[in-house]
Structure formats: structure tokens, C-alpha cells
Image 1 (spheres, one colour):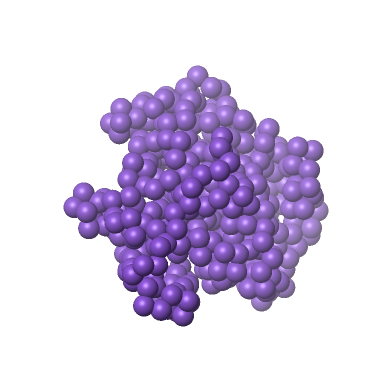
Image 2 (cartoon, rainbow, N blue to C red; image 1 turned 90 degrees about the horizontal axis):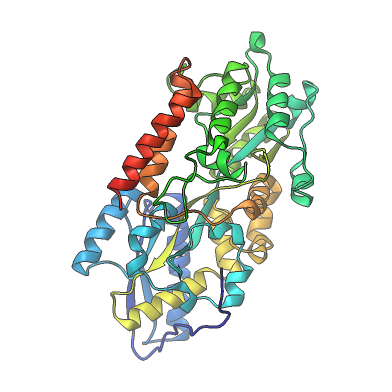
Length: 428
């Protein structure tokens, strides 16, 4: 990822006071919003103390949700009224890459190498380091009720065993299917697995494939039988009785969480953002949980969600330099740990994980630490203007495996392919 190992750093000059604005996609009362405000207040106080009369001041503005921020930010860039620094969703990086500062002018090679490299799936675009993944979450996570699985006589691996030797692990699709099947007792209303959706992106990477080429201008799964095999696997989890069809009832996603809490589900597919609440419920009701990566065929894969920071290049140089100082300060292990402890997002470095704030969190929710470790299975993602539309098309049409149980896998693959080709053509 880093062909060069040295580059010049943006540095604030402190010749006069500089005020900068930061946009975030959440509300001020959300955990993310409250965490950012806490850190901004600490930074401002430190700046006023260390550089009186010539300090940097950060003002945080809240946009309530990602779609609102994206719409406003794109319009603001056109008019030049954008903030100098903003949080953007990882899937939105191509929208801003041409106007973003290369963050290698903010972080040294050593600082970037210290970050969990699996969390940089969406950071590079067009040869530029665009986004600092400050609010990462992990998907492709299974939460396993180990107490229930033990009672059913089902042997599932430990997270540590997988982390210690991923290649030797026998946690494959077949092993997972067998575990879910064995744990199922439909007459008692107990199912081995529950999910509200399938995972087309993961099912390709888990087999060593991909949905698209590097810049999402071509389909990579066309003519690749791994796509059909993945759909067959996800369909079989319903047809073989391992899980309830997500289309069979309204509010299925909410219901399966309640059923998991009631110990009617052995394994549930979720993201790291839900691990704290799962941990709290398990502690209150006396059962043991463990987080596992979704099983592999040839390799494990964890997908990064969430958002990160970009710095925009159309503002005065002193604002860009001030934003760089603020972003470096935010990434200090102690500050990153404070944000993660408050919000539940994953830490960027091993050093942040060792900070007292996060050690305290991990005592009550150890799965959050495990999820961060699973990000070692993240790999650089294809990125392009068409990706968001293509991902939606694949996800929507792949669900035909359950909504149209009589439709052949071949026909579903054909429909997905046709729709994705349309989106690629329409979004270049």
C-alpha cells in the first residue's frame, strides 16, 4: 500500500488564531456525536493553553445522518462553503477523492503502518490515501451462544484458535452448516442460526473471489461459479431448516435479536456495533457468548463499515494545516481509546486497545476486542463511483434465493448480473 516511506507533513504555523469546522453524520446526542464533542472540547482547551492567542479552535456541526451529510457536503463543495474536515461513510470515498488531501501529508509511514491494516479497506483511492477510518465497525461477525451450543452437543471453535492459526482452522461453511443444523430443534422453536440478510460480498471473498474489478467498472463474478455456490449455500440454510426464512415474517430483524436473547437461536449474524448490547444481555441472563468470524471456504473475511475523516483541499492553507493537527491529535492512542470506549467503534491501533478506557470496556464486553482483532481479515475493497449502486443491486436481487424459492440459482445469477451491468453503465 505504501510504495514510498517518507513524505512531507502538514504542520500548523501558529501565526494567528485559526477556526475550523468539522461535520459529522450523527446527532449531538448520539454516542458518536457526544464522543467527538468531548474530544473537540479537550483539543480546544489544550490549544488555548499551549498557543494562547494563536490557537486552533474546532467547531463540530451535526448533520443527523449520512445521507443528509453527503447531500449537503457535495453541494457545499461546489459552492466552496464546505468544512475543511468531515466524516464520510467508507462507501462514499470515490465521491470526494478528487477534492481530498492525501492523508500521507498528515500521518507518517510509521503511524499508518501502526494502524490495523484490515481497517484500511476503503482508505486508498486512485493512489491517494483519502480517508482515516476513525469510526470503523466490523461486519461478517457471528455471535455464538456457547452455552446453548454446548447443551446441544455442538462443537464450535474458539475465536483465539482461529486468530492463532486461520489457515489451519476447520471453521468452514460445511462446519458452520453442520453446527447450525445440529443445534436446531424446530419443534421447540430453537434454530441454530438467524440472520436478516445474506452477505454476497463476504461469500465471494470467503471463496477467494470478488464481486467486481478494482474500480468497479466490470463484473468479476460473471462466469465464476463461486457466486452460484455462495447463493446455494445461503439458500440451503433455510431449505435445510437451520434458520427461519427472513421473508417469512414482518420485523424479522428485530424478532431474531429477541429470540437470541431468549436463547432460541444458537448463532446470529451481526456487526460489531451490536456487541456491547449482546454482552450486557448475556451477563444479565447467565449465558456465555463468543464472537467468531463468519466461516471460510478458502479464507476468512471481515468487512469494514462505518465512516472516517477526510480533509478537503479547497480551503485556505492555514485551515488545512489546522485540520491536520486536529486529526493527528484525534489519532493519539489515548484519544482514539476515549472515542471507542464511548461509542463502541473499533480502535485503530494495538496501542489504543491497551489504553485504560478500553481495557475497562473489554472486561465487560470482550467480544469488542475480538471484533477488532478480526479486522486482520480485512482486505482492500474495490472502489468506484458505481460501487454503492452495484452493492445495493446485488443485495436486493440475491435475496430472491428466499423470496422466490422456486426460482433456480441460475436464473437468480442471470438477474443479478443484468442489474449490476446496468448500474455500472449508469454510474460511470
